[in-house]
Image (cartoon, rainbow, N blue to C red; front, top):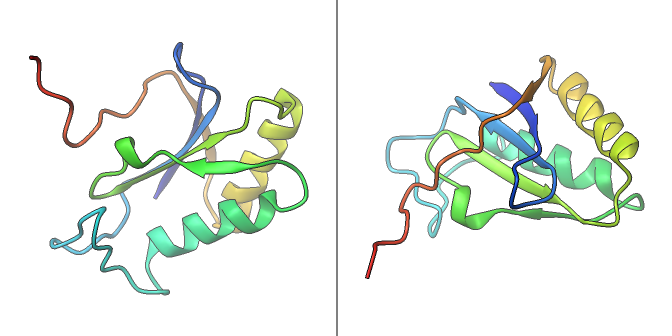
Length: 112
């Protein structure tokens, strides 16, 4: 699992987990991961460690097999966001990477 903190130009800060151990049949509309999966661990850690500090929301349009993404609320202080992301990475036993790339949506909208 790779955890990144990203600030894309059109969104607020994102915390991203890549290379998750999702099963081959994973679908964002019918999740088939278990409570022992990396996705479950990442998602629950992000949510639980943010409680009482600020709001984090899943970026459903960026979810894809092997990748989970949460966006921080606009009111969150950047120092608090960094502390939270570091706490998530430490809790999951991995390093936090400061990334510059935004994950690509699994099903980007088609041009009209």
